[in-house]
Image (cartoon, rainbow, N blue to C red; front, top):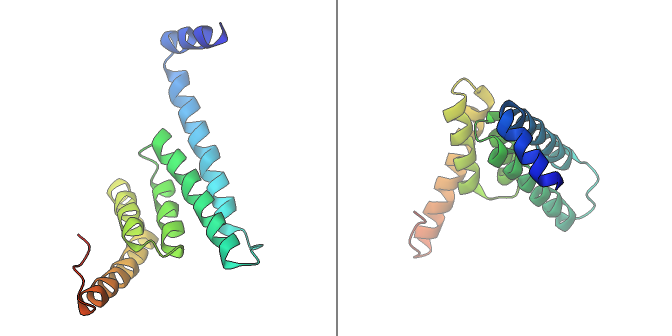
Length: 132
């Protein structure tokens, strides 16, 4: 019954849905920042877990608000720290598509592209096909 009432309220006032999405996305963004910036990991495994949680939070924020450039940027940062270079590049590119003036995103994109290129060349040097 409560779900039906909520759906009717949203139908009558769709602005509430957008406000909820913005609020919920910001909440996930903040949780992601907490995980990304936590200094208390004692092991690499614990830090990897924190980074995974951060990426999950930023994913939820960007699903709710695909235009949330800062969430895309920090998702890229978490992915880069977890050595997921290609996904980090994609996240930085989306942040820059949404906010072309994001200077730090440009710097980090350049750094990740050089890391990705080195990795690609290393794979080719070992007789493997580069990732496409």
